[in-house]
Image (cartoon, rainbow, N blue to C red; front, side, top):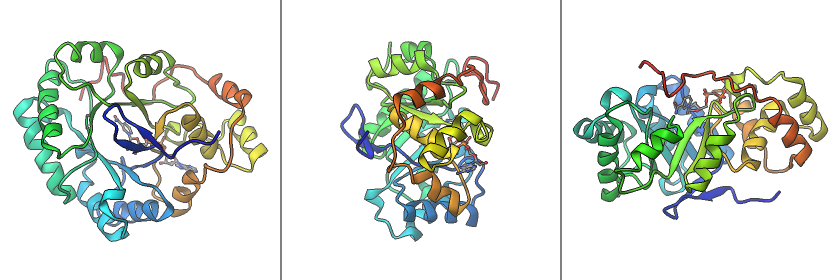
Length: 274
Ligand code: NAD
């Protein structure tokens, strides 16, 4: 399946389909190097968040990479304690300053904090109108959170970043998002590394001379899911991007779908307590 390396969001902007996630990557040299290696390997999307406490290093890695800013898609996220209208506007300024950028490509509400996310969204809409976030969206929103948000939203979220991997395929939510033209982005796409020895994945990889990680990334891409695997190792960062020269068959995809057990590694958006 030949497909574009970017996907068009509802507002017409292009988002790269494969990026680098930097959760639990240390600020300073570790994140600077990871971002530089990724950009040098061809990645054009970096996914950070205020709560990852590495936005400064992400900005530094981008500047050191030599890749022009306008070629890179930078995502950051509004943390839970900063939700609310005024505090969201302030938190955005802090993130932008730390990144050392004058705009981000995507700003996300990190979690659906009850009684607050609608006010946060008004701030997101204002930030979007100012041009300092080229797209806005949400993360960890179930269908009912989105339905509620859409009762007052003037701008529809362009992305929902949710936990998806072969053991949590989220098919009903993905179908709803597709119907609403909200792009689906997977977090913990490799199941945080816990499923890389799964025989089904290893065997499929052997057929193509690819690793289980590459098979999973390809599974996301062929399912029209934007995917942001994390690694701090140059070799693995390269490996995770080397997925554009093979194609999974529909039988492979079906076999991977069978691994679904609806088990989360992270919190449930209906019961998180942070
Ligand atoms: P992931 O599923 O990307 O797994 C990363 C782990 O897999 C690595 O730490 C490493 O142990 C292993 N790994 C990666 N590449 C490998 C390879 N080629 N070979 C062998 N092992 C390999 O986990 P993640 O970091 O939880 O998720 C990715 C990104 O998603 C995060 O960095 C972050 O940007 C985002 N995220 C967002 C949320 C949210 O609430 N929105 C939550 C979690 C993560």
